[in-house]
Length: 411
Image (cartoon, rainbow, N blue to C red; front, side, top):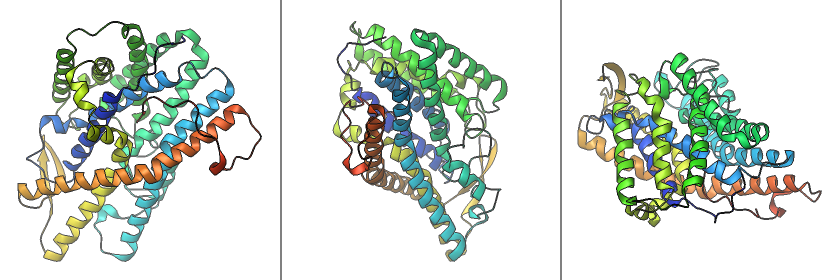
């Protein structure tokens, strides 16, 4: 399985990751605020972009580690790196959210949905422990605290599964991956009530389907990359159009998900194969500095946007209490009743969305620089020392720099 090709960076794919993270943030905004003006079929189904993350994660992790997990210490180092990639930011955001929710419960008026309980509700102590341990995608509890973090738990255990498959399958990695994709997809079809909108219930199974689709896609990329992609710009435009159309027709929002949604990993895998070639005009456009920065901050965007939404909704609720008006109303969305906050004017909601996105990206840039990137570096260096089996001091500040750079981000 050795690959002697030149290192690849897949910068356009990194930019797509940032765009998809923003789309997930808009999707969640549309189910907190009454935002009829933005609630299109595309937005209602934008939960599917989480599957893009899973497929891309499998693609780039396979690219970076497929030929490196050839010894027990290398496997241990890999798991430590993956833990360092995911958990520090997750733990920091979860802790900050815990402090904020506890403070609201102790010192201020608050709506019932923000109440802290022992083992029930969105902010229970039991759910806090399960989230901290990344056991939040295994049907042990519903969505709670930082809801999108279910995918972080799913990814960590999928990484461990990937390492096990590498060790056990040898050169049959593609065949093993295809079996896992088929098995996970069939399990979702047979058992998951929401198909590809499975989160805290069958989220781990959903992640396995997407991640190992990415592993297969990477092997296809290796086979094809020596040949030029004909009509690259046309292919890229077609890939975007097909993926966008698929998102629109894959269901009628999160409560009416079609079985067709199970094709999300395959659709996104095809798009990733095309953009991994970076041969067209869209790929060149995606390599501009602002979009590359958005890709760099994508994991932070994904992790901070729901806590910000919770604070935003609380602020709107406080405004309603002070003004003596009802700001949380019943709204029918695709036949389902939702309780959403309504500012009474579409322009006000659109301005709030714009401000929310600006603050989300700004905070993500901060958490990337202060938490995500430094702790990833520390854990990477610790993993390298473990792999080398050295006996020198393990003080994080004195560890050597990571020698082999990971050529593309995996979240």
